[in-house]
Image (cartoon, rainbow, N blue to C red):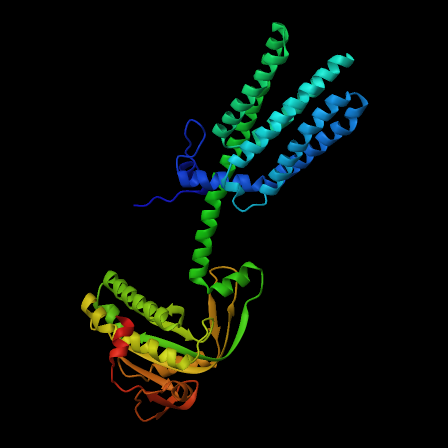
Length: 439
């Protein structure tokens, strides 16, 4: 027996993660990474713009303190940094960006290396000028590291690889530029502390986003199931209008209404067990549903043992009368197989009338799209005049749906609540086309 889960339980099942924080399901992991990277596009563009503005700001201030040679060196480092940032911002507009973390990896690492080289020049100039602003310069490197931690949120391995490359260059510069051991030790402690904080930031943001993602994914699945159920109960166009908060009320000037009823159902229900009766009705309604789908006829509802369908309503039809008759022919053609499966000598009557109806949804609970009008009543009355396993139609239906079909001569019958009306009964001449319709 299948067990139903709440959205939270579904999220827990789907969101099983490995020790590194990744989802066990590769498809789920791929959807998460792509979705998160796409969601961060705007933020990464802002980062690129912010960092470019910061570097340009340094370039504007540098002539006040830098020597001409160092100013030229700084500019030579600035230009490729700005080019990388511009290329990076442009890459985020590419459709394939979200699926390629290497773009962030290479761009942020290239910018970080260039900023470290520029910071070296800043340190030298500050030392020459005997200005103690080393802390503010160190923050420049932390800014790139922080954005890398956010860019790779949920991708700890990518961030760890990026941090490893960054550390190698950083400590390489420190070993070359620092002659004393004590500053090197403090620089190492400061870097390791910063790196640890950034790793924690990367993991925390990624973990929070993963939990949010699996809950959102589960809720989306539940929403899809709800919509599927809604579309199963209501026509898609009607369901869309209801979701938009619109009042659903329509007028159809020319549709064909089909009523199908089981002959002698009351007597039949007394002779067989309730379980067998349910199986019989289920088989009959499934047969009618199948024929409705094949002929483009819209199932409206079942009323006890009766089946009500519409041709030309929410499912437009070139000739609603022809489609309605083909639907009735198909259901009748499928009865022998149903009789063999159930062991019940089942017979039905089909009544069809073509005319105007009004359709819509009323109420707020157990909603269904229903039809009203005199056409519905006439079709119901005509159904009672049909022969067992036969089709009876009104004159308006006969005029539009006769085609090459053979009908008996019309008989004027007094219909209850309607009056005298000519009724045409389809002659009993099953064709190979009808058999193929059900088979």
